[in-house]
Length: 273
Image (cartoon, rainbow, N blue to C red):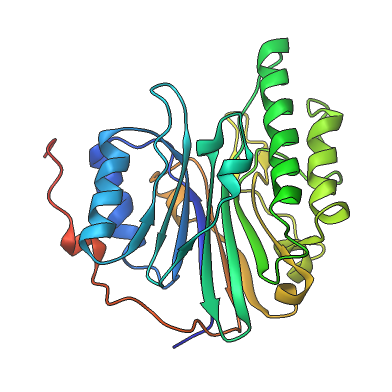
């Protein structure tokens, strides 16, 4: 068994047909845990969840409201539920957490999908409120005191303060949230830990401008265990999504694994075929 490996991937609220193609790609990946963001209560997302469950994977899929988005975690390792979403009163389905047993003890895996915004006051306040509540929830969840090492993955829709290129459209509270992951919660940007100077983007706008929206942050003890952390651009360049994925591997070995099969082979053909 290799070390604990995880991947975050914004699936872009797929149709059932595109979800089936995403599933074919995910089935080729080696990661133990997938954090899939921009989920909806839709045929496409249900197709993914059903396929993973049929294949014996553990699945956490908080159902978003009819017009809302969320996150799904699929694991080929045994999981225990983590209560972080209970600490959010605002859009709690945008967060999911699980605990995984490893040779170095419990690892808390938190998946998150932060709201987007535009220039309107309403959408700006919505994002500010969610980021603030999520940061409070991270503190209430006892990241530093629980004894479990933590890794946070997802599309956070924020940039590092010295992001290249620099943009003037991001607000102080967005940069403060990113800084707070380290300053308040003791989490390290895993990609920056391994690649201090490399310019990478996980989403490209219509004008060709790049943004590193998709992140992985972990406790310092886990950061010392990182073997690999890199962006995987294939799903974006092949138009499975408009986002690249981010993969992260630690040297710590999982304690156990489920008896799983290929989720693509386990899936029923999409009804649109």
